[in-house]
Image (tube, rainbow, N blue to C red; front, side, top):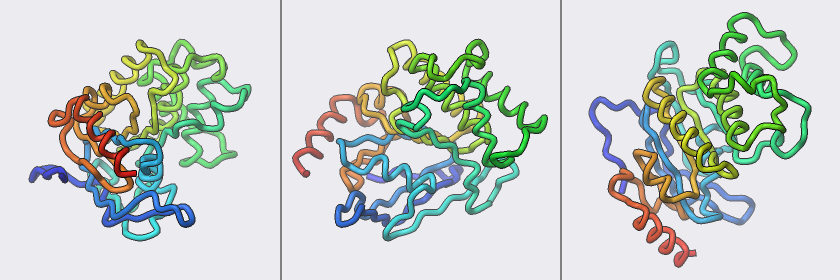
Amino acid sequence: MPVTLQDNQQVCLTLDRVWFAYGTNTVLEDVSLSIQQEELVGIAGPNGSGKSTLMKIMVGLLRPGRGTISFSCHIDECEGMTPCRPCIGYVPQNPVIRQEQFPITAREVVEMGTFGQIGLFRRMDAGSRKAVDNAIAEAGLGKVQHELFSDLSGGQQQRTLIARALVGRPHIIALDEPTNGVDAQSKQEFYQLISHLNREHRITVLMILHDLPDLAAHVERVIFLQRKVVYDGPSANLNAEGLWNLMLKAGRSI
């Protein structure tokens, strides 16, 4: 059930008949998708359905075994550029910085987002420092920016990682399981931040979520995977019960 494009909607990301396998284990089969600029998209599916692999292909970290992926910006100075990878911000599910107790502050984590533009060992200029300040302000981290990242709550850590992705002024931001390990209040703050970035800054949002009621409530479009695309359509047409039915159907097809 592919989403129907409106005449005035620009496609920024296209996958055409994409396949991917780890060795002999095929995890994506014949996936075709078009993501429109400024969409808010949720990706769901059972464990092992290929969600994280699909996202890594979307952001350019993996190449499909078969099929093609294309990307083109339609905003500001990036109009028509293909590819334009700095325009994609990626927040992985469990980055190394969360697994280890690095003595690094929240601000220093956000500053890592400048490395793609200025290089790893170069000093930040005034423009880069301003970009870091803006990202910290957008994520609501002003009061904790000088605290150790490891001392922050799960929600604060997640917002720090989002701020790091925002430093490069992305037009697409992709988040893998962003609400794992955060409390109810932090979840609400996260969804408010994502909605703000999508509506006010025109950022296209791609999210993998396991919380099915949240998925139905906070995204505009749902892509449900079980190696293939099982459902692709408006979230308004698929309530939480419908998502569970898809999950059960996918489980029976394994």
